[in-house]
Length: 69
Image 1 (tube, helix red, strand yellow):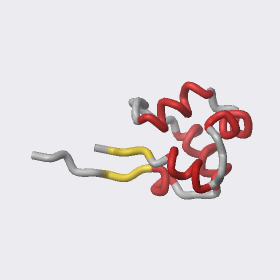
Image 2 (cartoon, rainbow, N blue to C red; image 1 turned 30 degrees about the horizontal axis):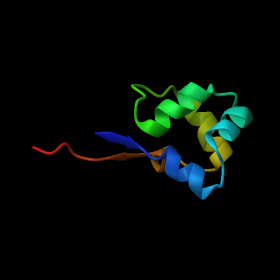
Image 3 (cartoon, rainbow, N blue to C red; image 1 turned 90 degrees about the vertical axis):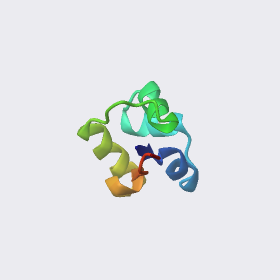
């Protein structure tokens, strides 16, 4: 399973979801879906805007957690 770490990165940057939305032009519901893990896909342009604003790498936004068997 892929787990998004956007909520953690926002906290580390002392930024709210609304502030990220305003600075990147990404719709707030999209950012919220990423933060809560409800996002089913992440377009490259969205990933690029988030990484540019938070000055991070795509791998910083996600982590892979193997499914329990």
